[in-house]
Amino acid sequence: RLPPAMPPAPLTKILSTTMPKGSSDDDDDRSDDEDEREGEGSDDDSDSSSAETDERCGELLAQLQQGSLTYGAALELIGLLKARADLPGVRQAREALAAAYPLPEAVWLEWIEDEARLAAGDEVDEVIELAGRAVRDGLYVGVWLRLVRLVAER
Image: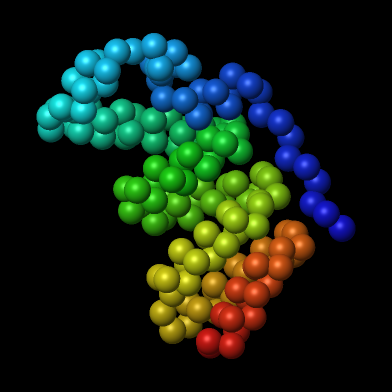
């Protein structure tokens, strides 16, 4: 039996999570000089980018705490937290996403692989349990294969 389809997120939510603030589809209308000036950024640009990333991460974490995080926003949050190496935050966001939506195979495999890389000793059993959750969530051949490899490697 296939998992139910994910409920569609409002279009405004999708656009706000996929397009950076202040960007639009009109970026092609800019001149090459504008593009070159952007490429000549300094450390101030990376600091402001980091501040924007931290701000966006904070917004998404607040949505997670309120239980109003959409599917796309949850994936964005996971990516931001992984980039910051915030393992507890990544785990919390993934658990919230799995509780709210059926996860596609690629998301399960990424989660399993991340946990498998970090697992040592008895923690491998926890990764096997995670893979077991994934195979109960959907009929994913790749996840089944990974589960078999985890058990064989143990």
